[in-house]
Image 1 (spheres, rainbow, N blue to C red):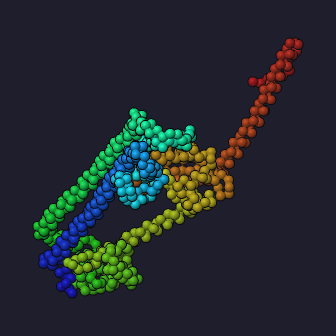
Image 2 (cartoon, rainbow, N blue to C red; image 1 turned 180 degrees about the vertical axis):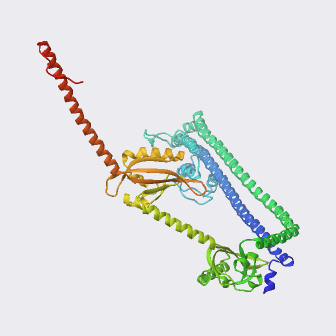
Length: 580
């Protein structure tokens, strides 16, 4: 056990065996980092691929809508052509089947009859020749409703509505022609109930004249404009989806480039770590040597134990624990150096370090030397991986003298507070922020308030309102100049009255000569002020009385002078002797 402790910091093969752990740990961190980056890149690639798929699906959907839009616009054109062809065929042949098909075309377009499946393909030619429907019927829905469902723009719908309006106008012409061919004419209400001779020539003429062809042009012109609009809409959508696809492709290319760069970086990084193995090993050996020297030269006692058994101590430990050699420690239980009052605390700290592999915070412990002398120390314990082995390093610093100094300082503070509280003076202190942070007991008894109510600017609530501005003006000016001040003000007393206070404030400095705020001594001078006020009143009364007496004497002298003057005028003698 002793040999093991002496060789704990020996460097060489044992330290060299540590290198693979360090090296593997570094590589493991590198692989973890790269794997994490690749994972997020893969997620990004999946997201971009999904967006590409969604973009492609939307593009296909857009093309399908454009195609359906084109078919519906073409259906309006085709229905107009079918109506023209069927009306002319009926007038030319008197075949009622053409008239029935004519009205069927109108009813399908207006949603009154079911729409045949794939109605955009060849239909009425087959019906005419085969005398039966080539495909089954679907739902009954008007051409306009289909256009709205397909997503025609408002402008396109307006143009198609305009075309259908012209087509409906042409339908009226065609109905007039077909009814005239049967000898039926308009009765003025839009109904063909008036019977006359059939007029085949009239019917032929209105189906082929210039007016009919002009109306036909009016129908086809808006439809042709809609075709152009659909084409423009298609071009815009294609450009939009192409732009989006190009952006997604660039992102995907960027991710692929990053993948390649990561691979190249990983290769060179691993090669760099492999080629630097000897350099890292040398640095590790050098670091261990420095660590050992630092431990040996440390003024703090450093002990290393495994499983609670001491394996190593530095030179400072010999002095702290009153030992003559390190051999006295090696193999001894670490708990033997702990005072019985602290054994449970130390055992719990050791268990927590071992179980959680965390540093134990610095605390004050009571230890004992190898001679049984107790002393206080600040102790820190940390887990350390040394040569692949989990050990606990303990650092202890003797604080006996510091505790004694603190006790003396605490006693002085107590004496100072007792001295401050024993006198009649009201004492306060403030910090560098000008806010009060202490009031002695006489002050608190005088105001009848708690220290919590007074600190900060709370005490100013006791100042007389007429003295508030004057006091703080003098206080702030003196504080900023670091000058003493002496002023009188009124302070609210626990009895409910305001009493006069003489406040003497002086700058306060610590032992290093640093300014730490102000300290003030206050004295109750209410009786002095009252005596001065009484003296002033008596003096005023005396001066008033003297004034009355002096005025009366002057008046008598004036009267005596006037009497003497009158006696002189009368030729008599002066009666009164006047003294100046």
